[in-house]
Image (cartoon, rainbow, N blue to C red; front, side, top):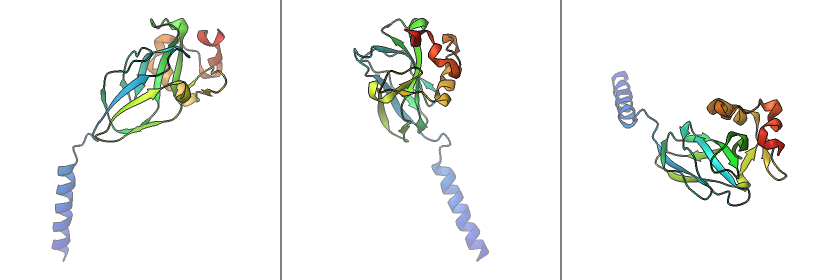
Amino acid sequence: MVVKRLWWVGIGLAFALGCDSGDGGSATVSVKNDFGAMPPWTICHANYLDVEFGKIAIGATSGPQKVQPGLDYVLMVAAWNDPDCTPAHCLPIATRTEEEVVDGQTRTITVAMANHQGPCPPEGVAPIPQAQYERILQLYPEYGFTPYADRAQNPKCAQ
């Protein structure tokens, strides 16, 4: 009886190891800048599940990237009415909710007025939580965004 159980455990273990590639699979993701003319945000950087998507012009979609399946916010630096992404016109923003992809999925995540959050949002736009803000500061220190407690003092917020 014990030998039979060990045999089944061994078969189960061999099957599990043979079926697991070890990399957790992958999904293919693109990010679309659907802000349009109002608000005129150019996405200077976009990062999703620790993969960089780069600059995305208004109305454009990034190239597809392979990501590990999971759940995360799209973390971004966006420039107001500035396709050149001058740091003084930039703010850290993120999607309002976590976006999910599963193994084998191909998905375009659309970022627009209705589903983003920022550090000094106008009425109707959610304020960015500290956790997402801090992650953006770590990803893009070259922009010199102010600490979370002072986020409304970022140059673009004062305009």
